[in-house]
Length: 474
Image (cartoon, rainbow, N blue to C red; front, side, top):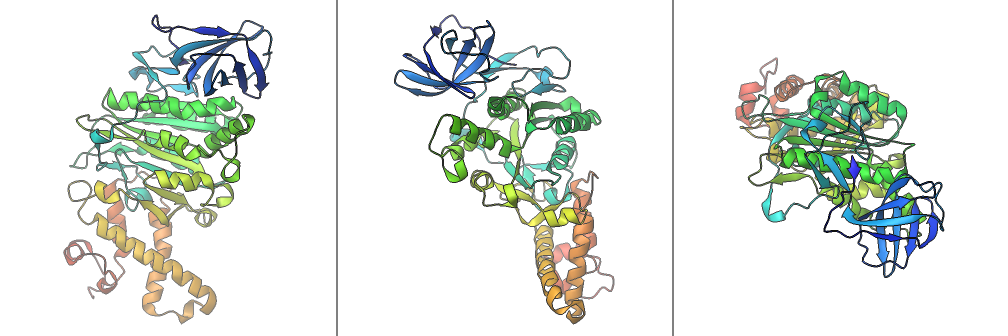
């Protein structure tokens, strides 16, 4: 659980000089030697101790955010104790299989986590000189990701969703199916999932817990659940606590850890709420101007370290308000991360699941994660061909709306038919878990009716090996 640790060489300081209480924030005057991010114990008139954190220090005045709210506090009788330490999380390998709240406290009815150590929730930045480039394939079991927007170990890849789209179902499916493969195509080193749900409803929390408990994936998963009725401040802590647990599993126990954060938009709304309460000058659409660096402090904790077999990979889910991809949250996220997976409302209306729109989707590290020794040599060229034919088919749909399908040539009709089959069978796989070989075999099945002359992006050696055009014509 989140806590502070008394240390003999650190001197605590106590004050009764509160000047303001505003929402989740308290302001303390006439202080000295207080540091940014320092943990604070607030003792109210009722004697109860609440945890807080220094958010801002200015000369002899500081602002503290209280994790469980300020109800019951007053200016005269409230005592503030500065601990001279940062927020820490108890971590241990026994966290696997547990359901914790946003501060790391058990909410599954089990005992408290017996710690092997306690780590700073803010993490330690990875030295760029010892970072390894992400280049190993992670199989999610989802064809639109594995085949066209491959996820690699150490990558940070966001999923851009919209209100009402099944992003949570996709997140749970990926969490239960994801695995790292050895070069032979079999499951490789120890794999773990850290799942952080930020600002979700009770129904969504129950959904995630039921989904994980129904699969074998629960034994390798840690769930951090922050509900919508939990304190706003806890939403700021939840992703940091989850990433701290993930770093411990990855770099101390050498596991391949997939961190799934959902929904980062709720995290950003909490940032905006706290910034408004502290009367900061707002940036775009009222979000704080430092939101870019704040998000980067989360996303950049993904990666790999040289000579360490572990890795930390992030799959970040966010909801685009009004499906606006230029909104500050997806916009800033896109600058920091290595690509994006976009969910489509049009595909969702067609009952296609998962409704991944592959055309605006992108994984910038895909080429590093695929190849002859990792998936298959034809992977890149097949993906390019699927993209090209599907993009052409989407253009033809707009043309058909104007001139009608009867005016299309035979080749155009073949492409249009391919686009429909691609959406129904390749993208719309439902909850089936497909390995990469099945995904590539399905891609060749979809390309089989197309003449070789239309498959311009696939080298001839792969066409001779895999293409099965019925008439044998080119």
